[in-house]
Length: 286
Image (cartoon, rainbow, N blue to C red):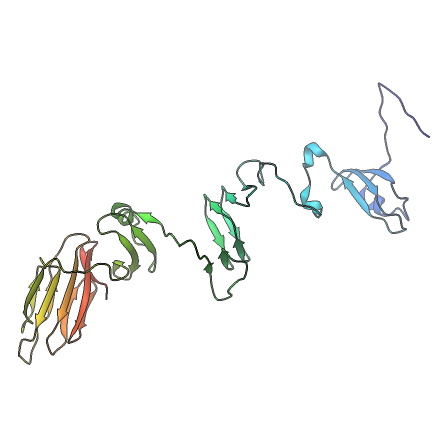
């Protein structure tokens, strides 16, 4: 009905402000205008009724896909690209559903991951982080579910562990050398978690002291028998070697005070206590 041809001129549709556009009464479906303020660009009325439904025709080069102004009705296909604010880094998702975040990740609600998730920066979840399940335990900050996999804490050598300085009490690591095992940081330093293997390589047996003594434990087990006295002295442990373990058995009829880097603690009659030498001091483990 209308054919415009030119090699030197263009077609200029009506230009107006946002207020002028929205003031048009009962615009026809398909009516096209150019808005000069706000989010400038072409707008058309998609409504077939008297109530207008103005839609913006974004500049493809300047606005990209404009996902923020629409609602997806099908899956968004990234085709190997990432979601990013400035074109670098961001979130990458594989066909298998594995997620990689190359920056910092902050989630203010709950986060649930059924595939693999890799964060190379810092990850922060203000709600519950759920791995391997879809339901959320409201009392859990971290909920991990699996019947085929385990939880793998950070693995550090003794040198790397000590280079951390003073961590937060309760921190867990797996130490890979110098008496490897699972360690937790307590108020008195690093301590091995669990009994480990305390099978005696050698034992030192003698009557419990009646006065305070200092002992340099060369054996794996120190076994104190009944001293047949109404008094008992304290046992102070001399420095050992990093990772050295010791079991003290109290077979006396009285409490046996033991002085270590964990302070002075009593071993009940007929009981034993486990110690480990770490960070330059003996620490009681149990």
